[in-house]
Structure formats: structure tokens, C-alpha cells
Amino acid sequence: MNIWNTTSDFILLGLFNYTEAHLFLFVMILTIAFSSLVGNALMILLIHQDFQLHTPMYFLLSQLSLMDMMLISTIVPKMAADYLSGKKSISPAGCGLQIFFFITLEGSECFLLASMSYDRYVAVCHPLRYPVLMSWQLCLRMTVGSWSLGAADGLMQAAATLSFPFCDAHEINHFFCEAPTLVRLACADTFVFEYVMYICCVLMLLVPFSLILISYSLILAVVLQMRSREARKKAFATCSSHLTVVGLFYGAAIFIYMRPKSYRSANHDKVVSAFYTIFTPVLNPIIYSLRNSEVKGALRKCMGQCATINHE
Image 1 (cartoon, helix red, strand yellow):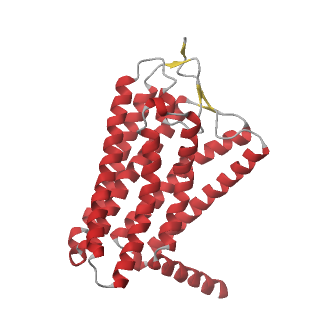
Image 2 (tube, one colour; image 1 turned 45 degrees about the vertical axis):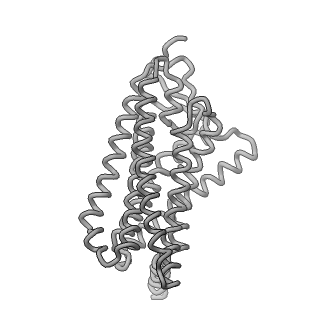
Image 3 (tube, one colour; image 1 turned 180 degrees about the horizontal axis):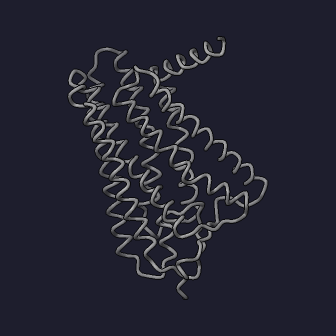
């Protein structure tokens, strides 16, 4: 097979065709993406405006919302433009940028969720020592560390993926540039790269996921010993919200990146990728706001202030 000119564009086959059913799904996904941007932006605004939410827990939550907004902005505008214009090409540089930002945001979120589980562990198991064990200095370090590790992984995977020569078949059966899908087009032995990528997935997915499971196992042991029913209820409400986000995020990511090659299917990958790049970000603000009395209180306060301003 001939080696394809790497200065030429890739072709993204996309998620939809032009049937009425797919047009409806396209509009639905755009609506969900817009709702996600609005919901996460509102979450960041509430956390910034309400003094009671100026705690490490909510600062980490604001970072999660920021990552989700950036993830939507990295994937959906290009997908929508391709579908509406019919032009589905993307340059190697554009493809590399998508891989970089996507891996950076996904990797950063892995470590951020682990940081959030530590925050909940300290709050539930060591409430009196919370200001010491979860200081603002440590919170900022964990946040910077999450972004830095994600960016390092994103830069490495983007550079390594685009270093391969690609074959004549330059059509990517996906709606955005994702490293595992792009590597399938390579006209070279990718075994070493795929092995290294698998090791990275273990470090970026399984290690934080294991820390989260340990944190919540310890939390569960403490919660079950609480005598106050109200305290147990509040702890379960806060932690179940976080566990729901963790389950959705890690479940989809492990499915995409850690399955054996023989079990991979392009159509399955597209559906699962759509789930954790488009649907999961809209669930995060809903899960955290509906199950959190402090966020709901901040929202009511904000709406009350807006109503007062409109009256005046």
C-alpha cells in the first residue's frame, strides 16, 4: 500500500449521515452541548460569586466544569461545522491539536477526580483536621498537577501519533481525531506505541481510579459508623454524586482505551466517545446541583439578586 502524503488533510467520516433521523439526533446533540456549556458556565459563576462556596471542594468542582466546557468546545464546533457544510477535512495540524486538547482534558480530569475523592475522604473521615489536610496550598498543587500531567500526556500522544507515515486510506471513521482511531491508518509497525499508550492508560486511568475506590471504601466504613442519621444522609448524598460522575467517566474511558484490539469496533467507539465527550459533561452540573443544597442555595440567591436588579 502506498504511503500517503502527510501534508494532506484527513477526512472525518463523522457521526451522522443526512437522513431525517440523524438530523434529529444532530439537533439533539447540539442542544445537549449548548446545555452543557450553559450549565457548567453557571456552575463556575455560582462558585465564583457565592462566598460560601469558596472552599477547596468547590474550587475543584469549578475546575471540572472548566474542563468539561473546554472538552465540548474542542469537539462539537468542528463536528457541527463538518455536518452543516459537508466539508469533512481536517489538517494534520488541526488533528494534532484535537488529540492534544482531548487527551489533556481527559487526563487532567482523571487526576482531578482523584483529588476530589481525597477531598471528600478528608471532609468525612477527618473533619476537624480538614483545614490542615486539605489546605488551599495543597488544593492548588493538586489542580496544577492534574493539568500538567494531562498536558504532558496529550503532548506526547499527539506528537507520537502524527509521527507515523499514513497510508492511502486517510479516512478517519470517527467524528474527531482520537489517537487509537488515527493509529489504525498508520503504514508502520505501531506495536511499541500501542504498548506505551496502554501503559499510559494504566497510569492515567487505573491508578487514579484505584485511589478513588480506596478513598470511598474508607469513607463508607466511617459513614456506616455514624450515629446521626442526618450526617449519614448528607455524606451519602455528597459522595454518591461524585461516584456517579466517576463511574460514567472512567467506565467510558476504560472501554475506549483499555479493550483488547480484537474487540474494538469503530461504530461502538464513536457511540461511547459521544457519550463521554458530549453527554457526560452535561450531567456533571445536574448531578452536583440537584444533590447539593449549598449549590441550590447559591442558585436561589443569584436568581433573587437578578430579580431585584430587574425590579429596580
